[in-house]
Length: 217
Image (cartoon, rainbow, N blue to C red; front, side, top):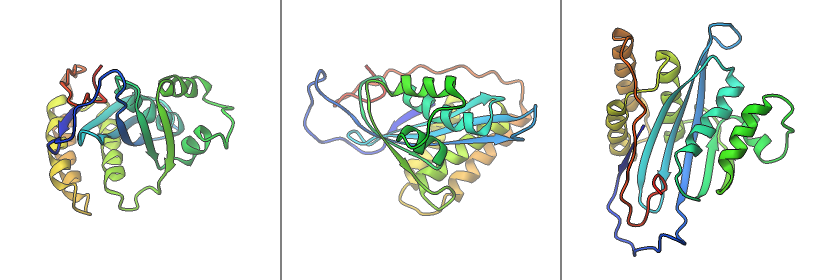
């Protein structure tokens, strides 16, 4: 997980006590061998602090959960990164998640997972948006590739890998093709597989914000 300022902020200063960041989250999940006992799930997210044009990527190993559970957790882990109340636009290609959070479906199954997501939504104003998967939407495609990487390696991607990918995504962000970003992730996944004993520590973030970042208190 990492974050990057992708453009300079020249706007006015904000009172920390009343300021509410505007955030867009593009979340996706991947579950290899879904339906089998040895399944491997990962969650990916691209989080954008719109006020600061600050970008943060997540690629999180979610364990042996099902594909539906992974889709819920991908949104949950993304919201966990917000350290202050935000106005959030959450994008997902899972109708299961979006329709349920918009009240169209009841939370009949996976209730413990839904409760985690609901809890993480408290304090934020979240708007849930469905987007068609694999339809060329650049940031959603990036979240998909990040989820695939975590499910393929069985680990969170390393902070230095995510820092590099953040720069790559910011640099390529005005292009329609996801392939350059995808190639870099494939290289990282190959390296993880070659050094499968590499341990992964959860990084800490301390972001000085003016205006304050969505990712810091």
